[in-house]
Image 1 (cartoon, rainbow, N blue to C red):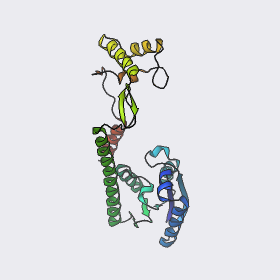
Image 2: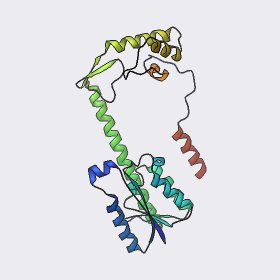
Image 3: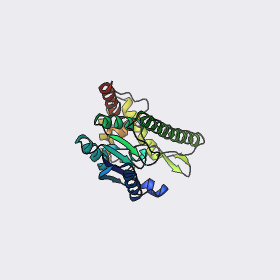
Length: 245
């Protein structure tokens, strides 16, 4: 059976865990020899986050080779090397299954060629997704706690400046906010407002000309006059669901 290996490290992985590409590759080679798999190619993504699939050249190469029928199984050190996102992993397994391609991992000995192996795969990515969401939830609650106690979290909103862990009013920026809201309440369009600011030599915090979206963020009770565009991920997910149903 022909196999390809896929290895990936992000700079974060290297800094925190010391996970190296060569370490993964060596473990995969040993696994393939033990399992009697013919390793025909090694695909790598180095120093790249697993969050954006299309930005990973190796990941795209893996999909291209799968569609071309160049291998029968993909071997990983662990499932997280492909992705930590449950939807991505379920969709990828479904795609590979359409081409009769198995997923194997060194860590955990996952093998999707059997129903039990698929169950192990599904449980692993479910637990990974739960952990990812727990981290996100804890981070959100920590930020809310800091904000409730007057600490600055995230970027400093226009009209204020940071002093230590607190925000203080920036009267210069507040005067710009007053101009913007006054013009908006008088019926001016966003483009008219930013043109006025730019013509008066009033620049953004970074010293650049204003754009309509920046002015919009300063307006109290701004009313959209257009229909919100559909979220691209939601649109693609719906198309995927309809296609596999």
